[in-house]
Amino acid sequence: MWAPVTARIEELRANDFRCFESLVWQPDPGTNFLIGANAQGKTSILEAVCAVLRLQSPRTNRLQEAVRHGCEAFALRADIGGRRLQFRYQVSGRELTVDGVAQPRSDTYLQAGRVAWFANDHLQLVSGASAGRRRFLDFLASQVEPGYQRRLRSYDRALRSRNLLLRDGPHRGRELAAYDAPLVEHGSAILQTRRLLSTELAPRVIAACAEISGTAEQFDVAYIPGVIGEFAEALAASADEERRLRLTVIGPHRDDLRLTLDGKDADSYASEGQQRTLVLGMKLAQSRLLAAHTGAAPFFLLDDIFGELDPTRRNRLLAALPADAQTLITTTHLDWLTDLPATIFEVSSQRLNRIHP
Image 1: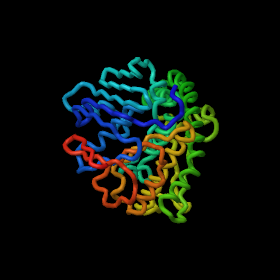
Image 2 (image 1 turned 90 degrees about the horizontal axis):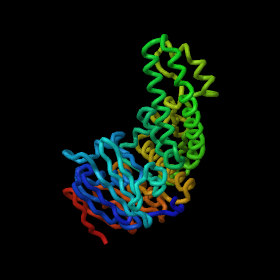
Image 3 (image 1 turned 135 degrees about the vertical axis):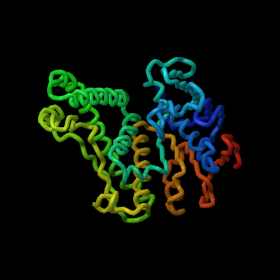
Image 4 (image 1 turned 60 degrees about the vertical axis):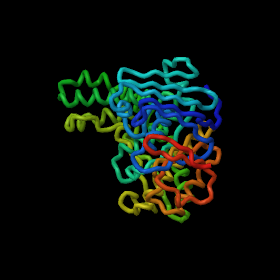
């Protein structure tokens, strides 16, 4: 187990990851900008950082998509906090090592660092389907509660099996009941975790939005659970509706977050600029909650988020990031940047060149 200190990546290596046959990068401890035209590999570098630290991608649920075209596997290595993490992925399985020692489970490996990911497609948090907001909560929960991901996978397996039986019809009732216990056990724990984290998240969202906007706009976030009352009782009470619709109608797979501006639904009432402020506030609040739970700032990965923000809000966001965190930012240009000490790398044709200082 690592001590709760804010770690830095001293070196990142990637082989056969996305467009990179081979990448070696030594980011500085503070703020690092990756600038360049689109389709040069900037986002893939941030994705590699997230993948080597969290064993998942913020861009896809299938890591197979991150394997370079024509290859069978990718390999990532990060030197962080005096330790060396190595992650090799192929379709048949994955290999994890810490300081050269194989890790049969991911628990120890995942203690190395947490991640806060900001991307330009996150308006979907406000205007998109509820699944995106559940993923937002799950990405946070998986970084503060050991075993959360395993519990989530167990719930999903029970839910899929149960729905298959429901689609077969009422004659599968006895088999259906066999999945009620794992559904309720894991679902109740997921509901509790999401509820507690949402309660902690809300005041941080309000504060972060105020910092970014500099206005008196009242943003808020509220948890809407997919179960009212005790899960087991609610599941039994929903049996008639389940048989009619042939699917499981209650559970954490129906959870949502209600996002509001001045008490009204943000997806229909807020302007695009206000929606961007809310999304950035949610991500900043998520990172602060991670720091509160772990005692260390996460790694900040900001992927091309500045294009739709005015210069004042861009600089307000950067000022709100903790000074002791390692921050990796992609953008196409920096003519808006005010006085911020930073290291700048140019990315061109899948190559990195340090251009400042």
